[in-house]
Image (cartoon, rainbow, N blue to C red; front, side, top):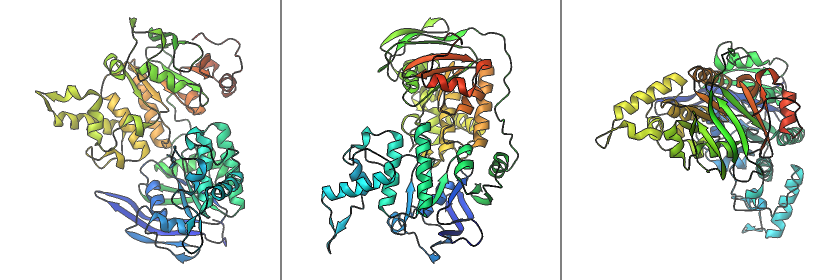
Length: 510
């Protein structure tokens, strides 16, 4: 915050304790009107807890908060909202079965008169239309939210905040599910909010976004305040060093080692997945990291789900190590040694109320049983080994997964499959929402698994990740394969052309 600037928000000495964990220890943060403050730190650094305190969802054990220079006790979410504080979660908190107008005013329907009777639906839609115009969303207020794209839903969330006359808006990983075009639109809206004097706390692991958007960066590490950097002071290496407590090279992808040609592990021949116009064909080699690039809607996830048997293919054929492979359900794929770490870890990759140990043993629970009884000692031993291998931050393996940060939840998903013996490991957005230090660890493990002969299919929307980790890249557009590029052919321009449907001359056969 520039010297002499008015302070919109000041958090001082915030401490929050949970059983066995000090989530925050004396953390301080400030925000000026019209400022974009990036809040950065590794998973488990305390960012989410600090924002829950600011949003009124949790009360601090120690410390003070001032809004507009006045002491504030944020005892509930409602109190925080009344002071103009709005939190936009990474997993958007919208009711899909209601229309846009109903979602904007849900829980705070505008009223009039001494009894605060709700406004008629017509007037509510008029107010919603004005808010949608302000955020540049052209959809009708009567549109059901389930019909919107992720980017449009993000705009509805911002409209909700503006309906509350929010002066402080917290955005938690706002671009994690957005296309490049939707992200660009969001950045324009952020610029307009700044011009209106609204302060924004922006949480993201995408360094390139932070460097463009942030006026200032506040870094947390292990629940403690590390320091601030202005945009002029900030560099990629400086921010990373503050986050992880050590220097970490920008080039944190493992060095690719030339290996002799390997035999095909998985061969996919004219596989037709639901909604695709044509069957897709490709092959993946033993010990290869095969990247899958494409824009939102290219059907990469649908293809991976067909390979895993979640939604069986309509036609076509596959072989795995030369033998027919066509899973009718996920259990068939697991028995064949084909495992999927899904894009949405919370909905499809974990049982959140269960412990780290229970989630780790779940896919192969029968192997932990003797005479009908679960061998808890073996379960704990295997789970402990995976926690150590992936450096998962958890008080213990008995901790419920719901209480872990997003990045550490992702490590539990990976750990449960690594505890078995994969032949093919499908990783759908493996590092989404994960900090740079944890990314480097996961990349190192991926490279190690490939060295062991495990075939990895990696779906990623991160161009740097695709280029840094892939031996070859399959590029998809509109539910079909547009080209396959070998490592020597990889460039952002070539991948982008194929992703947008431009024909590629040459390239390798799938």
